[in-house]
Length: 143
Image (cartoon, rainbow, N blue to C red; front, side):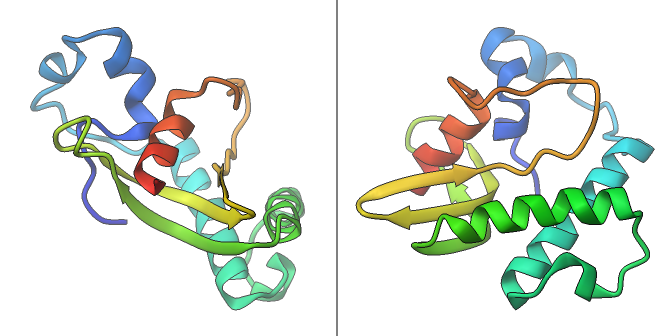
C-alpha cells in the first residue's frame, strides 16, 4: 500500500465528527496491531484472487480455513456483480476535501451505476453500508 491521506476514507467517521482529530494525532506513529495485520493479509488474498480470476484456496497461502472461506465469500459476491470491475483502485476526492484520497477495494460499473464494495475482515465492530462515510467518499472519488 502507498501513502495514506490524513483525510482518508477509513478514518472519515473520526475526522468528520471531530474537527480536531487530525491535529491531535499529528506526530503520533501509526502502529499496526495483529488484528490490522490479519485484515491486511485477508485484503491481499481477495485482491490477488480477483485480479488473477482464481479462487482464494488456489492461492496456496497458509491461511486458516476460516479466513479462506470468508475471503472467498467476498470474491464470489464481487464477481457476481458483473460489469466493469477495478480492484484496489486509488480514488481522489481532492476537489471536495483538499488532500483527500483513498484506495477502494472494488469498484463496479454496470448499467450507469457505480457500486463500491469495501471488504471488511474482523470481529467485534459492526460496520453498516448505509450512509457509511468511508463508502460515500470512495464513491465520490470513483465518480
